[in-house]
Image (tube, rainbow over all chains, first blue to last red; front, side, top):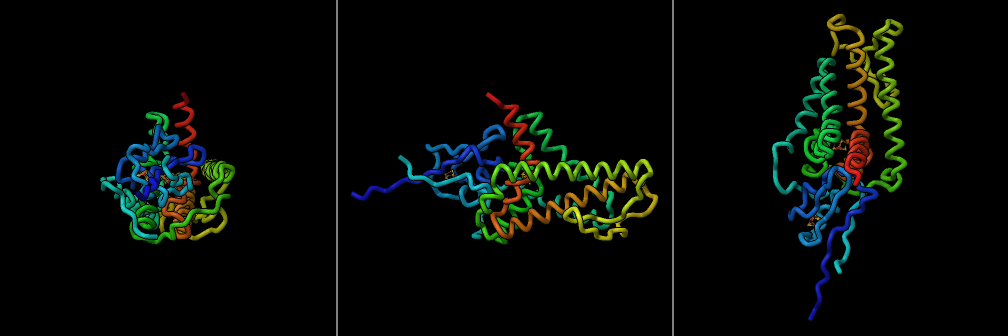
Length: 67
Length: 196
Ligand code: SF4
Ligand code: SF4
């Protein structure tokens, strides 16, 4: 059986600028700005579409293979 | 880049209209530039009052303008800015530079108010290029310092808007937000305010 690798968004707190671009385009409400400081992508909701990575101006989001 | 739309359309996605209105009105009457103070105060109200960057996340007219032009119309190349522009030292360095220029603008206003300097009916782009703008001001309609402040604020707003648009064209739509002094300051406030 072919095992499909799941991708998910991982957001770096160090370079995140909290502009909210990711939140605006996330179809699952997974990417959220937390208290104006950083963002999180809820792994249980993220479908790995990569839309947030496309718009992030800071390059804070990377798509990684889920465990 | 391939156009990318917000998931849910909200009224604030149309706030880019305010940006267009602001610059258009300042072209005809420079005193409208005073309204730019709204964009200076609101981010701080959200950051100090609520500990959020809701202004950036939703209500910033500039952020919406760059999103629409770059992301929706598709004028942006959509590539990531070089890492040195995205680095912390550049971000904080640009904030320091911008605040120095803002201070200088206030000082010029003070000099005009105290009669040491004459009102200059020009818009200064990139802190050095003086563009004649005298048609937008009727001499004597307000105190000279009030007009000077308007010219100064408009210069700052127009310069940063042009930088934002160039970054939008060359890189990702909201690349300006990675270096925006308002965004940097409000994030610092939020981080301090929400320190666990
Ligand atoms: S990859 Fe898609 S689903 Fe996951 S956080 Fe980013 S935009 Fe949301
Ligand atoms: S970072 Fe600056 S331009 Fe971007 S949304 Fe915030 S205030 Fe507006």
